[in-house]
Length: 90
Image (cartoon, rainbow, N blue to C red):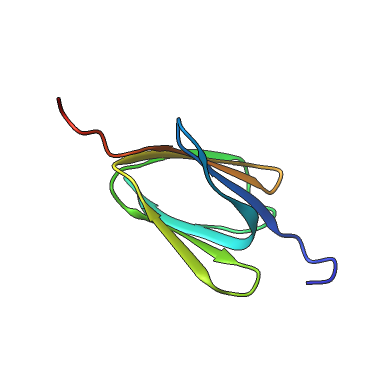
C-alpha cells in the first residue's frame, strides 16, 4: 500500500463508535442505485435505507453493516457513516 491513497472510515451511532479504520473502498446502495466510494472520490453525502454497507479493509477482508437508516459522507478520503440503530417501539 506504499503511497497509495486509502480511505479513513468511521461508523458512528448515537451511542458509540462501531468501526474506525482504514479501507480500500466502501460500497452500498442508495435511491439512485449501487455505488462504490474509492480514494480520491468527490465529496458526496447520501442516505442509505435498510441496505448493506460494505467496508473493504486493506487486507481485502469485508465488514458489513446494515442499519434501518444511515448517512454516508465522504470528503478528502474521510468517510463518515452516521447510523441510526434499530429502534424498538415502547
